[in-house]
Image (tube, rainbow, N blue to C red; front, side, top):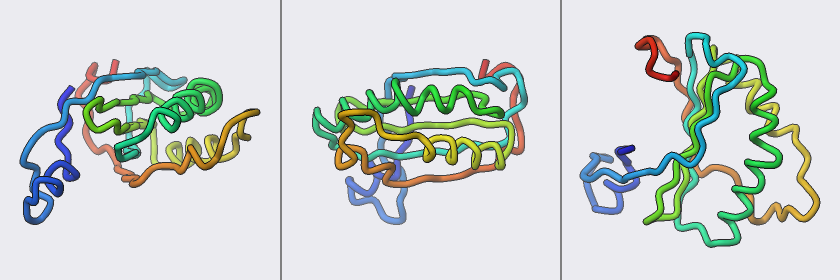
Length: 145
């Protein structure tokens, strides 16, 4: 999957955030939610900039698999979660897609309500570098299924 990146443009010195190259992301997780068959109306894009060291990557993957993913999967209104990994820069992008903007807010509350697991180090889990919340106004049938 190609994902154009303003971060890549800034690194290349492009003016005004112009995208000058694509970064290739691997789909690390693709999880349909309880509302997978519903029409998506909101999306949250969370950027976790690289480079991330091996300990931080392992902590983030454990947190997602053992704590965050299960909390998201039980939250009504979730259409899909995509976790994208950029191996060259060791960055992650998480895309949460939901049936509405209030459903996106509920996803954030569900994640923030989770308790750290035994052995999780909060210093290795600083949260996203950027979050963009977007309303989806048009949807091509079958694209997210």
